[in-house]
Image (cartoon, rainbow, N blue to C red; front, side):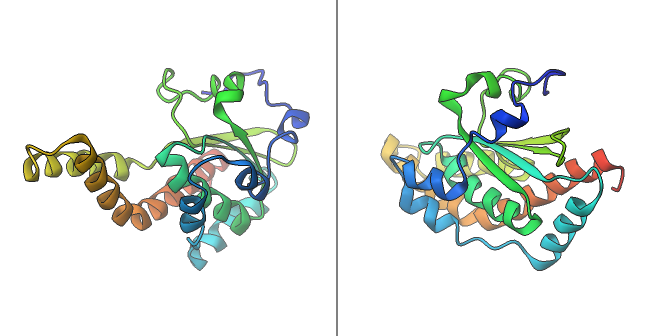
Length: 195
């Protein structure tokens, strides 16, 4: 949970990367980021996001923490960029490993440095809420994928398991992206009292 006195001041927020600048400077997985950036927010979701953003205390800014080597970031950050575009939010990206002071405010379950993290603020930089890593649906389905692979390939080496896992999680990604948007909308709507 975010602290009462955050290290993310309005001035600090402005120091992050735009999505384009972040992609320009990453070292690995650029092609995978570009592939996931093909994602489009559904028109009905875009409408709902814009409506939430239009409210007096609605979101105007999104801070994102991530790293280019993380699979959840590779899949999630492009979707977050599309959400920011659809809602008209200013997006500011910070590499997690260079900004532990920010990350420490948004630890998963109060202890894990899970990424990506999306933090929503009003235009006056009031904290609204944050979303971490992946939707609950993905956690459930990833567990089932791991069990299925273990049963289907009991003697598989680590490379085979990794390849199968990547293939199966990639196939689930469109549904996970939609579930992520639903979770973020709920976080914002609950805070605004509109859910």
